[in-house]
Image (cartoon, rainbow, N blue to C red; front, top):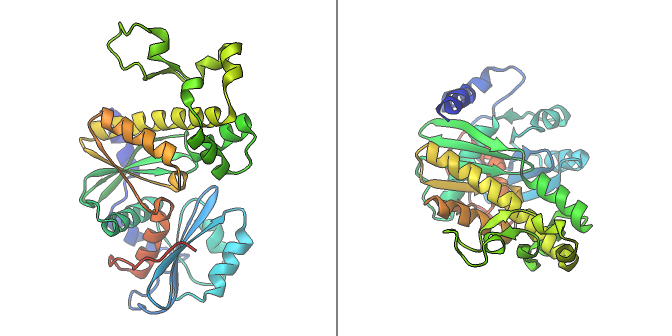
Length: 319
């Protein structure tokens, strides 16, 4: 694990790294003295584009648009006539090329750190580092926040893309929200093999409701016939949540931090997943904090960095 941390440090970003972006002639940084007017931060991911829009009234509001709707994203940003635009995320280069206005680009790590700290302060949670910051989007990435350093220490291909893909394949749902709604109504115990199923007398010193094998009951035709689409959705959420939770808890313990901060679009209105992640953190004696606007940390950070200020932006309701 120590070797993994040494490798991870090769992708470290510090505050000075962000300022080196300004020397790139293709990237123009907004003048920090421009503190009035509309300003926009955009985090363009593989599936969703998250916008943080500071209005003329100084209130920052949020918008969520599918990344594939690139024309709509460009039209909404340009129609706002912003004084500055900050971009981050894997699709930020594409969006910068299409916009007919000057933009600044921030690396995703710096944007997520800035936005997450701002959101933590607003929900009156402890924003002091160190902590592990987990971005749970299409996939999952874990960042160690310690002082001026932001280090990617790990991650997994399991994430919202996995949840949605398996949910669609197993339940016939067509929207992410449908999968989560089904999961909230299901019971994964009809799908997963529990310790109590293997040791009904309780002779093994493990909790009986502990999951021993995800989806194992589907191998029994009789048991499989009793399961519902809701049960399947709940089992998908449970399997993904347990694995992400265990990976992130292990990374936190190895980094000697006691708190995991979770954000990302996969957590939006996703109580079943939040419950699993809470349990997995508690098993390792860790605290788990969930951002109240989980999908907008990157966009809010990009906005703050583009404005050249660490001052919190007053927040309004999502658009």
